[in-house]
Length: 310
Image (cartoon, rainbow, N blue to C red):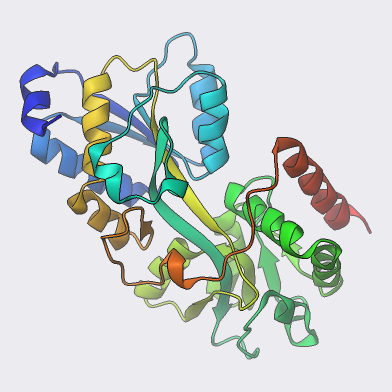
């Protein structure tokens, strides 16, 4: 489908995109699509949890046409519920098979790492376990995996790769004073302010953006491995603007759209678009595939029990 066809056939009604952010990227993608097609894009940007809550609340009168989430689980869950429209964009040909299905495709990809404040008077960490050393006593934060899907992915990856050793690491981190700080931004803020030295499991693109703004932090991908978090993009079956929605997905997956993704410090989903940051092929990755929903619930409960116990 060409954009000119969409121009000729679309109604004046705006396209509605719900996205888990980053908000600046959503605005740029909306502006780029509107410039090419003349179709206005209304964007609702919030956390994945708030976006999903809004979708559920609007079941009787659905508003969203396109959804971009920060959690791959969102897409698999909505597919199981029968909420998604099958669509494979021709621009997804350059997206690796692991990052797409008949119902959704990655918009971009983030990774989790250690974010370290280089002015913190602590040694530069190389691996996760370094943050459990005495030099980092009471100096580490981590996002809450019950609030951050990417943080839960890291927890699952460490559990899958190292089993009981992973839980010993978390026990040591707790003993060393690591604080579970809420969502991703709440974990990063005290490190930016210098009140803490490092984040265990920070979302990389947020930190890279802070580096660009002049913050004295460094993104470190641990030598023992980390996880990546593809951000699924999907069309709601309830959309009344399905042709426009397909064209928007095409635009996001175009070279122009993927360059905007790269400018937001995410990894592009397309393999033929570069970025000024490490790409997933250069990272050592932990296994993420073996955890079904019941496993995830159990691992999350074990983490919560550990960090709420005295």
